[in-house]
Length: 129
Length: 140
Image (cartoon, rainbow over all chains, first blue to last red):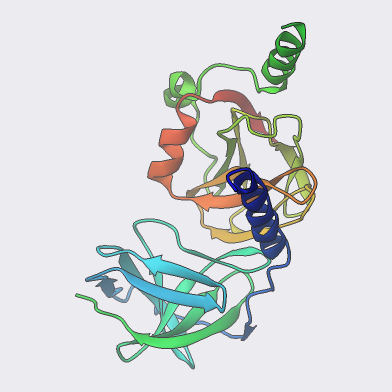
């Protein structure tokens, strides 16, 4: 029975590799960011706790407690915040730098600055300070 | 024993050569005014035989040599990084004037061979990983 362990491990690696190779693109739609006014004070958010957010059915990311995010503009879907004390990316078939899109207290999606697009997510309430 | 020696020799030859990054970092000139500086590095010798080219916005800027680090100074704006590998996974990010961004050539096991793909890394983590790597110079 123990002899099967390496085979099972090999199959698991192969399946995870295939899953990664077949990852689908991040679902998104074109979006135009209205930048924050030049010279205006940029408000900041800080995550009060770790929050797991889903990017797709098979991929999620954690917004770490204590991470800081600065307001950079608006989309029709909400206010856009960029991480200022680190980097944040979302991943599908490719990896994209991403900003948070927040409406009220809820994260509603991500803004991909290079692609000028909005990637929706299942809304969750973010605990911030 | 001879085979093992040959294998080790191949691995050593496959790694980047140059001074340790932490010995030259303080001597690097600043990026020209208005430019962004993008560092590229590969911190592992896994899959050392696979050393794909690294393309930034379509132009080849270097290759993903194991244990090597280099940088390019570019006009700020949108960046797209691709490593020619078994599965092509691109990385997109923005870099502003005077900003430094760090891209790691990560290694994973592909369907047939190792695959090398780009990841955006924050400065603190990148500096730790780059400290002992061989600096192979500034690329144009």
